[in-house]
Length: 124
Image 1 (tube, one colour):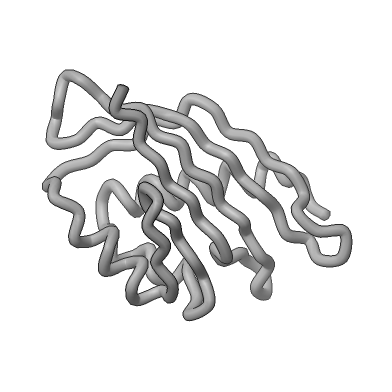
Image 2 (cartoon, one colour; image 1 turned 90 degrees about the horizontal axis):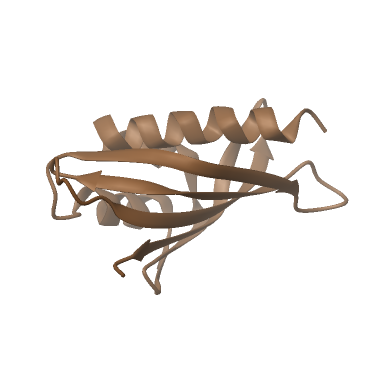
């Protein structure tokens, strides 16, 4: 397997830049069998996931990644688990929220897609 830390970094840089500037552009990272759990609510399928992401009630968002860890997730295919924590600045708020997100990435040709995605905000 290639350098999984480099793959994880490249993926998360793309994911959060796209989320922050063009949420609709994330659809290519999901498949019909992909699943996202957003704050405890499961959502399946690329269209439904992007519908959820694009319907979030804020105009401007900025992800600031503070930790990024990655591990292989299967002994038979070059997939990986990526765990991210960071700060989420919503509509230029002076009080960013802490977030965590876990992705399971599966190879698809020369790139990866998101098979599983778990997102959680920390309101505390």
